[in-house]
Length: 417
Image: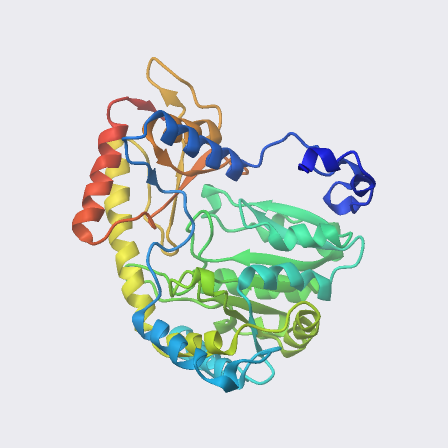
């Protein structure tokens, strides 16, 4: 039977209100990523002989380091690694604490009480509200941004208050603009730097401001840092936990997905305030039985070798330079980010003498359908599109070819900005 056939049965009446209740599955709105998927399929069908250049994908284009893979194979073969990991192995926690110190200069992290592994950052963000949110409580989120913590806040009967990230404020949230009544009701403040999708980087001064604001308003800070080690042009990786007082009010979520090309491996960690780590661990213990021990040991190997990430960052930095230069020659006002593999640019207003773009989504759809270039639109705070430098290209010569092809496709029209 199809989904539609079951919509007429009693099952349709049983869904929870949080996902739509009796109307679940009947919403005709199409999520933007589904629109992108459909547009890509249509473009490929219409132009089967033309390469589709995917600048929308938000995951690395290469496999994990050979040393990490070899460590996984070695550990997977050991019978003692076959069982449940529960809330993690000491070896991984120790490696995470050492990694924070060596890469981010974070001192004083106790691996036994202030670190717990997670099966990637997404499940950690999904579970975190369960430790804090009661009906009516508020989680403060930034937009544009990654919505998972906010989604689960709403599932628990909480509310989400959005703070816009604007170019004028360097894509940092203006904490002073958060209303006093919201701050009073808020339990969680979610931050993400280097930022997805803007590529913006935080500063020690901003994080110090966050600590002061959180203490004043008694709000827990959750800093999502999957791109923290991917920085460029001499910018030192920055951890929220390196700022005095940060551990008093929050935690930081790290992931090996982006910094070690390990998206499918699903491994990361939560570090910081021991009471928050304990509460999260209790919630986690009721959600999963831990990541495969062999993966944790392979990840520990990776954390002990941060030069792996440094090489990955060099590749992304080189690609950013090429893409920024190409877009600016066309007329965009692109600025190389200080971190992440995302490039966030304002969409043009239209084509001279032709099509207009009322939104970033309009421009993104034009790029896919007419130019076979995939991107991700963001219209939460202005009209922007996000390009990713994780496009498929084996080596520098191929990178230059792909960027040259992008430039060629975008110069047969004249954009208006």
